[in-house]
Image (cartoon, rainbow, N blue to C red; front, side):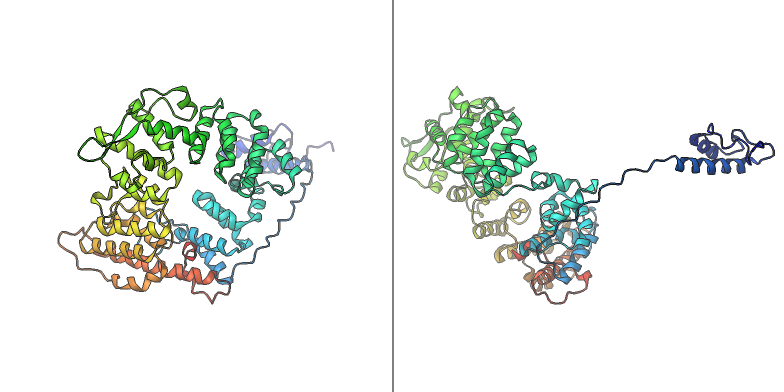
Length: 559
């Protein structure tokens, strides 16, 4: 015991772990270990010291309290996926290429672009996600926010269970109603009131949304009970939830909200009231708007004359009119647009000589007010979802530039189309494409129901074929081609096989255009076949699947 132990004083506490690491990094030639015994090689002494320090560090650790075992994942009562569909899902999730690198995509389908349709179809069938696919499904949803609603609906309650264990998947808790919390049964009045009084904002917002979807009056009464004590930003979010189930019964509450101290709350309340043509606010706006717009019969033909408001009085501001226009807008035209937008469209038949919407829109407007007036009618038609006025403002799809009387932009036309039923919408866009081609059709195609109606699909394929034969620059049609892959009826694959050959290139064609078009049509046909296979596999009694490489059919097509 009196002699020094082997290694001398290298076990002394003075040799901290940090010092040992530093010596190892620098090397013992440049920095000798502290307190090395005579005759002891420095590298060996360093290793001895490190070994002793390691034992000391481990022996000095206090055992941590055992963590509570996680609760079992909740059961998912939905039926399991057919085996072929489960294999297809694994293939879709394994493809992370995205297809959006910007170069030529070749003839291979973009599987990740088919995943949204596959998820929509699987959800329509009510299937449960395979447990082994949940991590990859959550990873895919993490990278693409557009996937999240369908992916989380398909993943079910087990996705939330996993999200609580992995910080990378916490988005699932934020996206879930109430942050993933379990909401009480709407029939349990006491539990509903307790959560409304004591819950977090996300839980209360989810609860209100659920109530408005099932019993709108109950949701409104709950909101009214605490309205005076809510923060302004919360009042605005809660008020927006009244869009669901909006009816005349909400008018008294919304009229009260017109006096709110928050300008944004007042504006939202006014917008909701103007969507109720029978509301008192809509009647007030109708009086103001009709005072500004009249029919002039003194000329050779009837015309509309406009006298914009001279001021924005307090009553107009209370009813949601914003007094200060944006930069570049005149005050009077700004006020006029807001009044006409909020007035019920049924007002104008009596004011303008009993004419229909189509006849009113065809009337000339004096003094350059036509653009402002028609644009306001467009916004009113969109807000009130009035098909007759939307149809009139869109005009004929074969009109010059397809600019209906009030269609000031493609975005406006797309909004007006949304008020029409799917069949009429598809017919209008097909007529537009037949007359004007595809150069401006992308936004309009985006509002059409999937799969595209036969006439619309035919119009798109014909226009693509015409563009190919004309030697057009092929890459300018890549967006429409991508839409066609996802939205054409899968049954069109057979008809498209005639387009797979590489055409003879014209002298004035873009270099390599023929090869690009052949690849694009090959990818289109292959994708349609995959979508057909996906639909078959998701059927409750699915036949044996093709090899995964032949991939998938989307769910929107199943709809």
